[in-house]
Length: 121
Image (cartoon, rainbow, N blue to C red; front, side, top):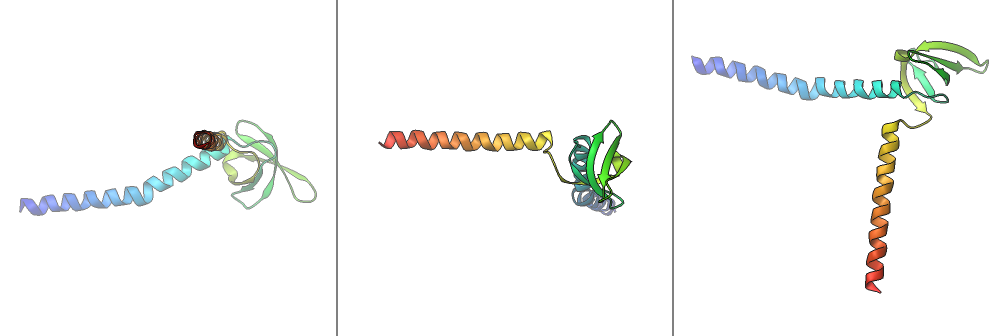
């Protein structure tokens, strides 16, 4: 009888772990990425709102953004939480850091190749 009680607890624990790794964790990561994108919105970025409106950011404040949309250059004031995606524009600081790291690694690899070539000569 005690084994059956423990097996039920183990079964429930395994189900919780599966739910965590397949549902909860990826959603938290996605929410974190969206939050980071909204914090780093800049003037000139092309964005799409949760309602499907696309436009170019003209002004950014703490909680609001002003976008220009359509051929009539209509200006709309929106909350930052209403932005769903950033289509184009400047890189976030994290993306800039990643690009700088990649360039540094490539430069270091290039320097090592040059030093190996001089050793062979």
